[in-house]
Length: 139
Image: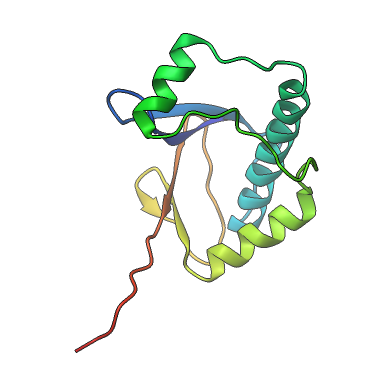
């Protein structure tokens, strides 16, 4: 099943939101399965890039311009040298969702608790919104 995730492209000249395709072998039944499948996909992508970055040690002109527009030019170095652990990442993402760090919208409708069902259809659009925590004191 093919769906899309809306991703904000930081660092481009115009900050835009683009749709990134994702393929689910089996559609997730609830929010917990949805988060777990997306996190495992992202962890495998990250670990693949980590292995490739050990080989490639240069930036193209376009990458330098994109990074300069965002304010930092670097090689995205993993300083501890370890790949991401999928189970830890899934646990962290589920806890963050329960704590209200981010919300998920499926075709403009907010998804509920982790146990609530997900009606993912072909060509559906998922939007993840990270909520910014404000600090300060109340008067």
